[in-house]
Length: 205
Image (cartoon, rainbow, N blue to C red; front, side, top):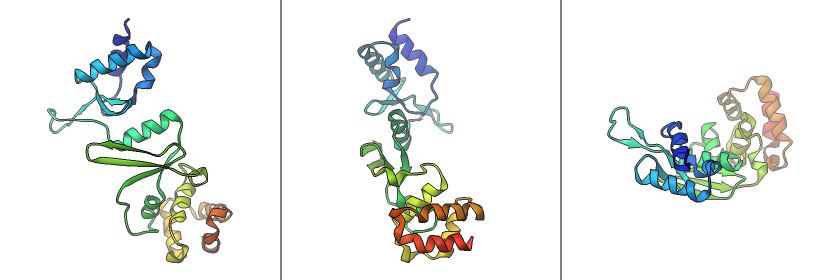
């Protein structure tokens, strides 16, 4: 089977609307042959280029099949991070807003990462990835990670302990889990300014 047919066969097995990287196809043949196959399929409308090195099978809208959608900028950013093994978490401002520590929603979609800073733009959608220290990316997908990032961007004097308790509830933490998380966070040097209120949260839970 030719490289072009191998590329087409794999693409036909992929879900529509889910972005993919061209690098995942280089095992099918030479880079030049793969790039030519991808380029031809793009020209034929089988796939669409959504960012440098990233493509997607367009997905028809259920309500209007004649209109096809591609991937979102956020999806592409997540595929990029997974491909390179980078951590990718919502920025502190978004975490703080979701937990009720701040009242203003971020104007832009921003992620923090241990990868390089870059921008993903698809149509009117813009997602920014900002390189940040690994210390701020701890507990990537855990509740304590979200709370850590929310506290890092919020002045402690602007938040009552009762608000911290509500934040823990929004994270679906039990009282025992809240005590454990508060103790864990109070030991971090980066949250020195929060130590007093974190201890109060631990005692109040």
